[in-house]
Length: 223
Image (cartoon, rainbow, N blue to C red; front, top):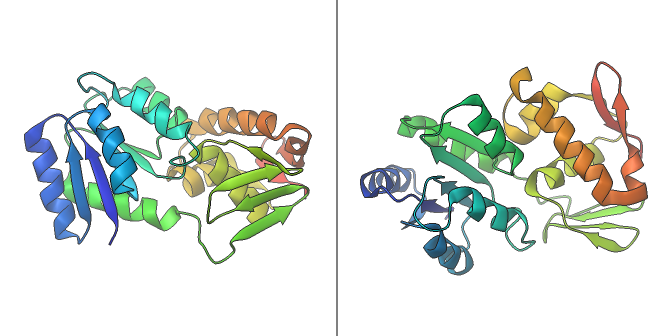
C-alpha cells in the first residue's frame, strides 16, 4: 500500500486530508510539526510527503531542505500544501525541491489527482541501471556516480538526469522538461529548469558537459 506522510499543523485540515486519502486506499500518517515529521520520515518510510510551510518550530522549507540533502530521502516526492500563494512563493518552493505546489484552499479530488500523477512520474524500476558516458544511475537505490565517484543530487536534478540519459540525443524544450519532471507546462516556471540544469552540470563535473544547450529550444544529452 502507498504510504503518505502529511505534515500539517491545522488538525481539521490534517484530518480531512487523512480521511480523503484513506478513501483512495492510501495509508496515511499525520504530523503536526516538522520535527515530529522527521521521526515519521525515518520510521514510516513514506512514498509521498504532503508538506505545509507555516509550521511551529522547524519550518516547512527547512524540512524540505533536510529531505533534499539526505540521500536516503532525496527520491521521495514532496507536494507543498500552503496558504502562501504568490507566484514567488510557488517558484521558491519548486526551486527548493518540491515536486508540486498546491495552494489553499484546494479540492481533495485535485490533491488525490496530484498524488496519483506524482507516483506515475516516479522513475520506472524495470531499467535498474542506466549507464552512459561515464555516468551510472542506480534507479533502485537512487544513487548516481560519475567516473565511479558518487554524486549527491536533489530529487529534481536526479529526475532530469534520468530523463536525459533515457533519451540520449533527444532535444527537450523547457516546457517538455517542466511537464516530465515537475508536472507543469508553462513558461512561468521555465527558469526553474535552467537553474536545476546549471546545478546538475556543476555537480557532474566534466561529465556535465554532455548536457548541451540547444539555442532557442532547450537541452539535449550528447552521450
